[in-house]
Amino acid sequence: MRSLVLAECVLAVALSPARAADIEANKELYRHYIDDLWNKKDPTAPDRYLSPDYVEHNTNLPPGLDGRKRFVATVLRAFPDYHAEILEVVAEGNRVVARVQFTGTNDGPYEGRPPTHNKLSFTTADFFRIADGKIAEHWDVVNVLPRMIALGQIQPPASVPK
Image 1 (cartoon, rainbow, N blue to C red):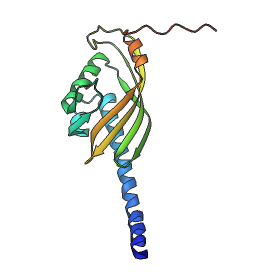
Image 2: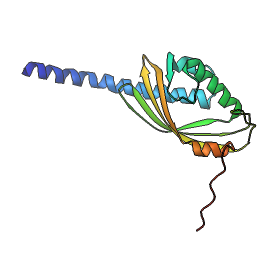
Image 3: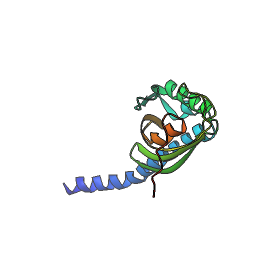
Image 4: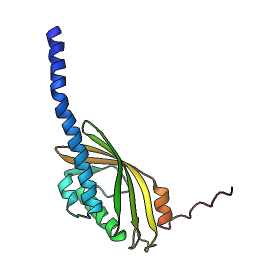
């Protein structure tokens, strides 16, 4: 019994650096994906970073890899200066979670509406599952209020008197 416990401890210690390296690789994969996609505006980024069977869990976005490419093209046409700033990235196992600040100017039509030429700034919390060195799944929580105000979909709240 002691031999089995000792063997498990040795194996756990031996695998720890490999797991740490995988976690760091997953975080770097995510960082490169965001930079190439949104900041360098590379339309081939989804093909390089997303799994062919990529699953999008946000029901407001088109599904799959092709859906992601269509969404990105639409956003970049509407917001030519779109930019993503990664505020924080954490990872464990095959999961990566990030907090991101997105900015841009609505200089093109978006969601059937004419451009507002308003500046856009909103944050997201994005959750990813990595498999075989690619992003396989995505979930998110989006702070939609600032985006809806910038796009003219709702009026900004009235200022609160002091």
